[in-house]
Amino acid sequence: MPVSVEHPFAPVMKPGTNDYCLAQDLRVINEAIVTLHSALPNPYTLLVLIPFEAGWFTSSNSQPLFAFEWENPITGTKEQFTWTIFPQGFKNSPILFSGALAPDLARFLEWDLECVLLQYVDDLLLASST
Image 1 (cartoon, rainbow, N blue to C red):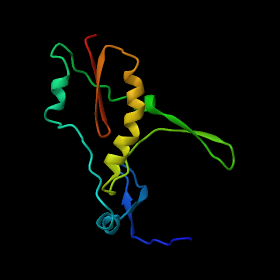
Image 2: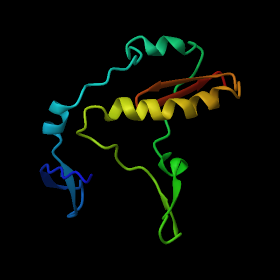
Image 3: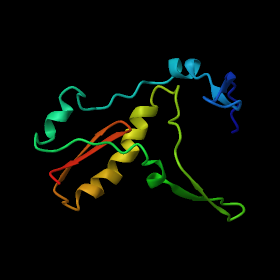
Image 4: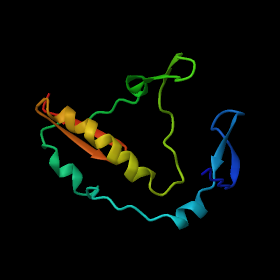
């Protein structure tokens, strides 16, 4: 049975451009759905899992490393994408994303690379002694 759900869209200007994207106003939907709760680690105590000897650095140019390929099921054409934003507005997005990412990260930990991998929703921190 087809269901028609209507909720408002609003044009939002993309930063630094004259382009717009449509943003969904999900407030009514957020009021109607059950809030999911996750056992997220406490961000204030999460970092104690990293050995003190581990150094700190960041890589702000890592976006291309997480590119992925998508094949259009109708045309068969393949395109490469990178994430630029995380869908905002839906109250369960962080928990659903974290839950979808966790199984992939668990496989990474099976490699026993002598490092610590911390996940907090969509933020990852990889620490090792070298």
